[in-house]
Length: 70
Image (cartoon, rainbow, N blue to C red; front, side, top):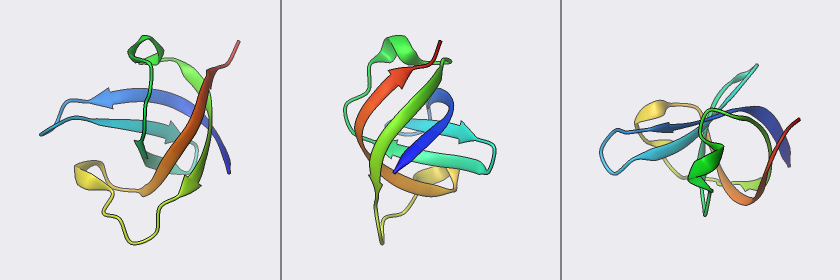
């Protein structure tokens, strides 16, 4: 799946990457470059079934790649 939105690091507990999309927040799991924090990005990944979306709500995605837009 491909998702677009603003990438943000949420410093709750152990920390969590979140993609803020037009449809809501998506928790991201995987290796993400900290330099992309706050940027508009495109994320390629797979939905994670049965996983809690941590403290930020929304769905969860296992990340394959993240690219900055623009």
